[in-house]
Length: 254
Ligand SMILES: C[S@@+](CC[C@H](N)C(=O)[O-])C[C@H]1O[C@@H](n2cnc3c(N)ncnc32)[C@H](O)[C@@H]1O
Image (cartoon, rainbow, N blue to C red; front, top):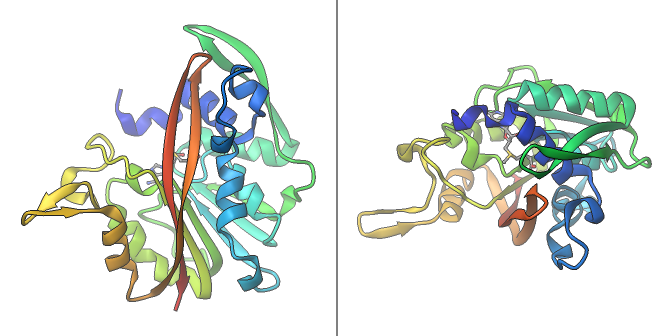
């Protein structure tokens, strides 16, 4: 299968619904400790967003929103939030969650065996503040307007040409606006041709790291604010998990 189409599959949908919405009892066997890696999307917003810098009536954009959990979390603090993802499947289900507040699905236990699970948007979030659109982060519509927050959670290493997306950011963020980029920097040629990787290779005998390339690309328009490690756990099936540690960096539009 073309890796880029993975995000349209049943498997990815169930994996991401569980990743975004479900409680620890759904995600992990009872005696496995890894609570610090759960609720990644709410931690992306809760630990990275600088609330005191937000204007009243802030607008936010969640690029590569998948099934929308961080988009909803941003709506706790921003009056309008747009979630954009390339997967039509993800956007359809995110729209269903916006309308109904919950979605029933089967999560994989073993092989073809699934069990029913429910994704639920926290009831204290105003879902009417959110809208979802299918779109390409490397070719965004010209009329999106300006944002006070742009979140790109675990997106850059899934793009064919991450620089194209990064180059549009100065135009998308209002002055003083916050850019939050998280990524485990899992560069893979199936998603990003090697010539477009931002790091993870040697050039002229020097080791190139994504974090340094991001600084180079963003520095003319953004002030680096802070970075931190954000662990995350994606459940593949009842006995298999991916543990990642994203680097989350926050940048302020000059
Ligand atoms: C690793 S997932 C991360 C999803 C979500 N932000 C999270 O942290 O769970 C990557 C997401 O990027 C989306 N994506 C991939 N290429 C994209 C593109 N060109 N434009 C917008 N979204 C894209 C995928 O459909 C998928 O939802």
